[in-house]
Image 1: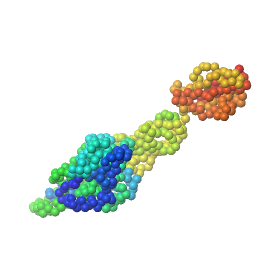
Image 2: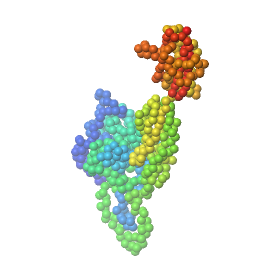
Image 3: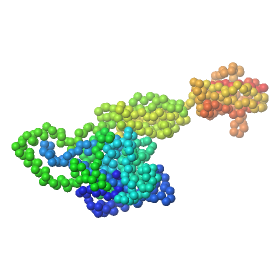
Length: 567
């Protein structure tokens, strides 16, 4: 499993003494320190035990020691009776894990291009640490069907790391255990964990999260295109020369060829470093076994007998078969080549409501066919308080079988105007898609008083009753809508409920008061409350008598004239 647990015993591997020397030289500078932080990244309480300084990501947990099968050196048409068997399925990587590795590579290429991290090194570590999550036993979101836990790190054959996470990751409140497909110990995950699938969580049991975390962990300040840096990166994951040899063997193997297989069908490793079990006969532990060349020598004579002519010619038609060692039964890799709008409806909304349309995009592969499982990122750009569900400004959505990804419905805030919604295909350089979204001010089609009390006052007195109105749109209350109020001049008192066009503000009669107590006869920036109700400030009468008109109006065109009597 990722960070190392104990020393691994393997036939033909370097001795423990040599491995220890290599570890001593590297652990001081390359092994990442493990902090006593809990799973939420909070400082551990006083007295909480901490892992030993320089403990690797996995705490030196056990790992799978199976080596990849050798690729046959025989040219096409040559006899292969005693050549190593090519395990085509060994090159198969479960679909979700392969996707996670490649997306982690793409993320690092954008964020830390100088690291030059190849996804195959993640696949190699995933193979050695957990057998590619037990052959790809993960759910639709990339989380392991059952937890993958390393042995208890109690010092018996492994590191001695007392509990650092309260058992929240590994279920053990006494000692730590390596967790997940990349086998992080809890203390390392607390400082190195990543959210690789954009769900807002950092879960070591999720292959997207674990792969991205491993990618950043391996990179550090290194350039993995440099062999010495690559070696140090792998050793920082597990302080063992044997571990390094195993990982680099799979790294080279996957670089020579790999393909996607369905989840749950990956080949399960057979031997681990903490057991004496020998690897299956179909694999070769070290390059040395290739020296028993004398054994296969008897076979070369076989084609020489009386069948020399037929033997070479028969393999000729099967020339495609020799290609299997490099990339067994390869299928063309799907590649996102087209990114386009998928009939997105106009993105408009009234302040405080959901947008009628939802951003939709379609991804196609190089053959022009819909591409599933491509990750599309939707982002809100510009000055706006519109958000995706949960207050998010960006979300990621995987395309379906039809190649489409639909963003969740946006919710408009109170800020009106235009902003941009942008969509990109994660891990590609395909051109982005942009939509203009518009938030309109709330509207009302009716204003009405909430009571029928008479509004009257004597000259120089104040009106006993307040003016209170409710704004509605198609019968539903409209909260937060702007309302303007003004005492207006009319040719003659209007009939109840009748508005007068183009009124002018009256400089005599009833008035409001400003903050300094001065008379004012118009008010702006008034808004209805959550129930669509607005109560105006107290109204006062001057020395003028008669019937006056107070007009209320909204941006949507709703108006209401209220009569005020002074006698």
